[in-house]
Amino acid sequence: MKRVVIIGGGIGGLSAAARLAHAGYAVTVLEQQEKVGGKLQRIQLGEYRFDRGPSTITMTHAFRKVFASVGRDIEDYIDFYRLEHGTRNCFADGSVVDLSADPAEMEEQIARYSPEDARRYRAFMNEAAALYGQAERHFMNKMLVSWKDKLSPALAAAFIRIRPLTKLSVLLRRYFSHPNTLALFGRYATYVGSAPDRAPAIFAMLPHVETELGVFGVRGGTYSIVEGLRQLAEEMGAEIRTSLRVQRIAAKGGGVSGVETECGFVPADLVLANGDVLSVCRDLLGEQLRPAMTNRHISTYEPSLSGFVILAGIRRRYDKLRHHTVFYPERYGEEFSAIFARREAPADPAIYVCCSAYSEQELAPEGGSNLFILANAPYTSGAWSWEREAERYQGRLLKQLAAYGLEGLDREAEQLASYTPEDLERDTSAFRGAIYGISSNSAKQTFLRPSNRADLRGLWFAGGTTHPGGGTPMVALSGLLTAEAMIRQHHS
Image (cartoon, rainbow, N blue to C red; front, side, top):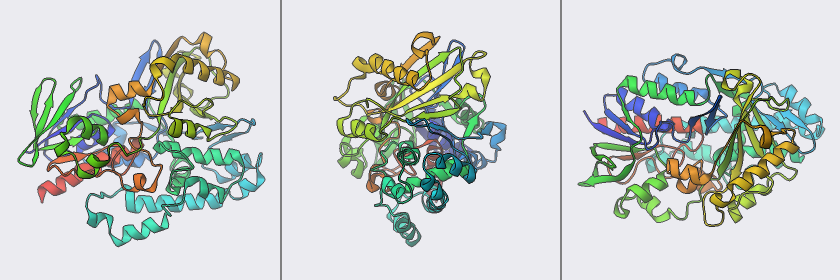
């Protein structure tokens, strides 16, 4: 029986663990945090329950595939429920758009501030659906580890059809002109840690994903996905060990031999690193063992954006809020210059608020709200110190939210805590504290991500930095696809 060590118990690592254990491998998952989940953690502050990490859940079929791959029904583990309106979008001019699967409802809402944009909405959504179709058929569900995979005629044709050199913002301006609509659909670039004026047009598929495929809540909070995957992996026979940090990936005879940990050596025939590829290569592999492409370019990859998070528990409800709400500044887009060019926290960012108690009151006290508040932020660098600035920046965001109608958070909140990119880097070994690994601010970083298979025999990668990319469902697929590629190679 081949022994597999999986470094990192995030969603990708747990998905891979279940599939590999089901295939007969002896699987051990090593997680450095106290609980599995990677960037997705459950936080209990008094009577308020929060999910710190991914909160907007889409593409539930990706998770379903993981469970189906081992003969299980996801409904026995995770309870998804579709939200009637995906996200409430509140603009600086007072306009509100509640994301809806009904195109007529979307047209009506957009027409209140721009009849011209409303007339072009369906044509844009047709293009979004076409882009999603190409991505789903040719990129998201296939492993691209060899040049044969990457140079297949079907993939080349699909690559041309998605217009990889066209930027998302350019595509949006072919359909829309009003700042509200451009912000509404431009914000999807942040779902992959990028800026709308730099990310490729392929990400225009995401409005289709949210409206047609749906935005979902998870009963008990988003961390229930992690709990379901952990249960699945353990039922398949995987061993999961937490609070155990891997110090080095060991090699012998041109292949992996195991990992060194704080508590000794763990032998392995195969190693799957579910951590950030760049962090793993920098911290766990000697220079001579690193993948050639990654070793040459660790310092030249641009990390994705990060985020500054406030968790606020308050014994009141806000009429403006839905399960997901975004408040846009008057000049949306300026924050990306601050984040990627100056590497400092933006002065006037869009602010996302998740209040899961809107859908499940039991996640907060009666009449209370559990607010996960997120502003995009730069990856860690010497240009900005969260140790010095976190408290001041928290106050700034709470003041902005008060202006948007969420008064009293600074005075009345019963629970108030912040979480910075520096905290994220420390807890999860995320490279430079980036949420999504590397950014998708260029065609190269979007479509030529670090490979799932390393040059070192027996070493594999899964997660947001590698194929098929960042985002919770993509990471689940990354773990599943990588596990199945490992099974094919080592059973051939």
